[in-house]
Amino acid sequence: MGRTHGGFLLGNLSPLSQTPAGSMGGMRTLNLSLRPVLPEDASLLHQLFLRSPGYFALIGMEPPALEDVARDLATLEKDERRRAFLLYLEEEAVGYLDYKLRYPEPEDATLSLLLIREDRQGQGLGRRALEHLLNHLTGAERLYAVVYGNNARAKAFFQAQGFRHVKDGGPTLSWYVREL
Image (cartoon, rainbow, N blue to C red; front, side, top):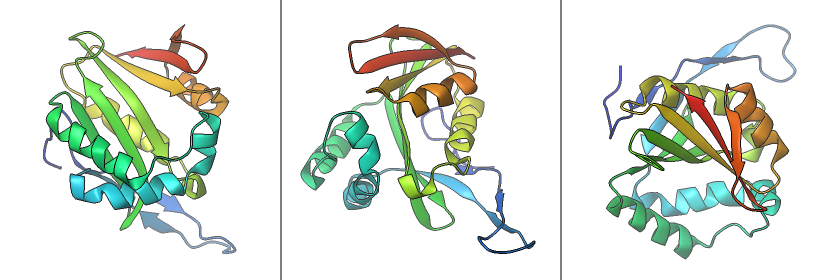
């Protein structure tokens, strides 16, 4: 069992069993864990963004500069409703989860970004991170997920996880919700 951090339980998620490429049998278990992102993690988060160029192309942006990431993390520290975590597979940073409590309404939470590094997508890591959030998010009745750009994979992912489309917030923003 992990410790709590602002309505969210930290710790290891259930192990992920994986058969190494080219093997005919043996399995190894990989642990996915979450750690709150800190201002000193700006360079690590920036590298994670740089290793996910497809996401930024999809939303019509360049990956943010290191200075922009550092500025966002400094802002994050000042917002008592916002939470952000780096996702680790063993010792390797493979993703980022960013959400806000009590938004848009006091009984809601909003998932702003669940990003799995492109070379680690398709391994169930996003689903496991979302399950962990859903199981440990306290005090919320609904979880909104914001999908930027024309991101068909993200839209399908959230719908497969029980979210329903609520509204489009413009040409590049779609909102999904799931009752908790």
